[in-house]
Image (cartoon, rainbow, N blue to C red):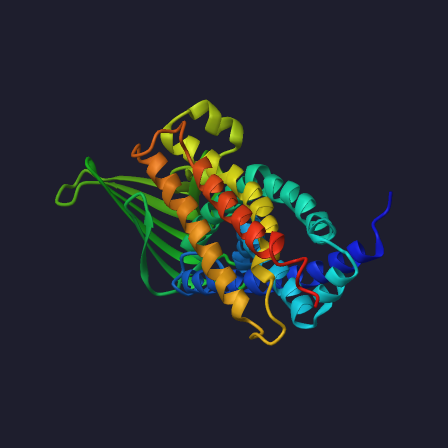
Length: 360
């Protein structure tokens, strides 16, 4: 059975408003991330060419958190316009009750609930793990990205390197490297070299060509000299790029296997976001109910405040569970119970009592 014309109309109004709010919130989110990544690139912590990759991954990782709020605000905006233009009054006069209105709202809310569940349980953590991997590799690459000729630089593993010239293709010329060990000093000089990862084993290497290696202790004559055609100097151990170091990047199966308070709190929080979509969808109609002469954005301000209370309370209670202050079996479910009770009371007051007598 297809959707009625009224349901399709409400569906279109809600979708347009929701998408507009979502775009604004995502742009704000990405702008904050962009500033952070640009600062890291300017300081040489990451290469500039990975900024937009990290932006996309972080957007995917956080989209599940953004969508419930953007949907709620979008519905309140859409329904508020209908109230201000007296369209809701006309619907009530034609005998169209709240059930028909909710049909259009939940035509969006139900698929969105499934999408948010997929994002928070699977796609979001996978994007977070990939972002961790890209960031770790980018930090490795940035170690050489900021090399300037004629300066001594620290490259890790206690290695100090001086490079006379860097060619256009990234090659290194006139290299001096020194490493201090408990048993003495190691010094390398080479005509040319390059940076390589996993070229001569696991880790990051400075590959030197056509040079000499000196090894010994200062003040003693017993130094060993070795000429080489190619020699690898390890400057970093294999980077710990195992993704998912934080609980927010762990898949649900690993959280269940962990079983700790922090893992259970994270899992409950992820499951809370799809539930939040349904609770907010149910509460959007009584909140959007307004007088045609009222302000355009008065209800939106109230909606933002209520959402922030709901959202922050969920995260606060999840912190209590993670810290052991609240038992896992209690968890965050009671927050949804309180929110649902408030919504049902609002429905009874504004719709049960006022819907039928709204048309004169």
